[in-house]
Image 1: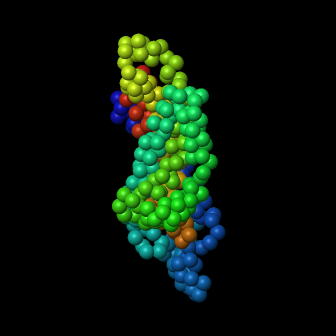
Image 2: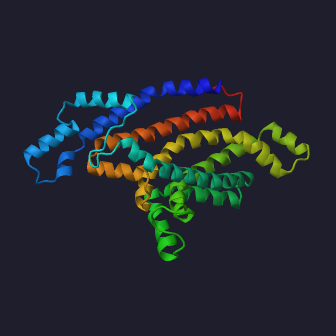
Length: 307
């Protein structure tokens, strides 16, 4: 049953993938600048430019390039990069684990902060703890990662010298970028957890559980939170794509060698196959995560039917 749902979702997202590939292909060719001139330099002769354009296939009509790209894509070939003539798949696979490591770390940070904070706010509704949680959530939403990242570097790397400012390495290199990327999601999830828990606390089964003599901690974390997680899972699935998009900026700030940094480098170099490959992989990851989210719905509550 779960397998059929997963396959059905994948079939439904095929038009989305086609639209992403087509838009990226058209937009990257509309961006001002010539990758051949970027590669050869301004002193290149017309003959060198013509020869290089022929080698890259850029002398063909745009529709022929589009069809050729799809022919390669359907064979599982993302093409060859313009500048170092390496397979696009090879370059992406070299960077993809770093991006997923950062995105998953940011997700862990967001969940680790949001669930305790949201539950505390809900169980102390209208009190001081609730106000503090609301302020923290508002600050997290208001500070974008391109503003929070430099502030984190200035405080914890430059002033306090507790953590490295950039690069990839051990766990200490992951802390600042993960917090920067996960802060906004943590704020959103905190408000969602708070709302869900408050709604569940009004249900009759909570009164029954308390009447049976269960401790408040068991009532909240075993019964209330389990039922309140369904809308939270929805937000996590939808926001994972936002994490991947935000990773482009965060990776640039912290010099994190992931797909985000690779995408920026490819755009600057006008490396069409590499840009298309990077964005396609990000889009596919987002689609797969959202498909998996639909399956998780059924695991959390079998009464939900994913059509």
